[in-house]
Image (spheres, rainbow, N blue to C red):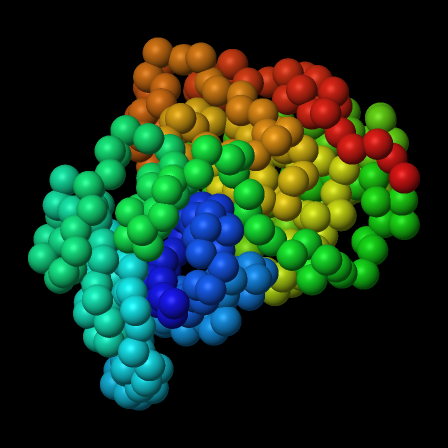
Length: 342
């Protein structure tokens, strides 16, 4: 069986789809996937052994430069139309992903109106599947794949199926006892205060740990450089592709993350990780794997589910809710779960 999967973004959402691929491959060993994904995330499908081909979608670049669609669109059309699929599965539930699925040749499956993020997308599917939205994203995807590909929903634990050995990179620390602090995220309301990060780095340093700080854009690099300033035991990582960064994370003794896609990647790579939640609710989109620990802000307006903190009262830090998740609490949780030093 040949399946075209449309799951385009974001990083966390794409990682969430991996356990469903593992389920499908175990239930139907003959199944093979091609995967349509945003071009910045094309490394991820290749980490899973059930995926044969990755088709890059450049929708974010096209929004910035619409004329590029006319140049690139013909190639994308050819890739999508070049093979007939037994199943075309849109696991994104957006109008744009439904249009991509509609270009491909094959019987189209997707979420029903009551389940899709954009209900109009359901109009473009031949087969519509209702999935209760009051569940974690990983559970919803596992149910969607099982229904579309017609196998019993397994009761097994989440298995991301990543071939971690493929991600081996040069050791950044010989004893592999370093920590990775994943400080970057898309919403200002999800940013843990910088003075808390600095205090956490100092706590890690006192335990003999080197701290590595990745950055995905100029703002994150500037923050990482501020956090590492005048500290020989904190290092800003160079620019790495996603596989290179995954290799660094996979080798870490542990990680700390805000609500960010890289936190989900750490979970998928079985790295002990403490994830900090204030504006968002981990019950629906939190990290899922062994050794994942969620520290949730205990504050009147949390989770606000808002991109920007709207709290106007007196506060020790900004966003205010993170005063209930101080560095000592984060470090205590992480230290108790670190991988043993080599």
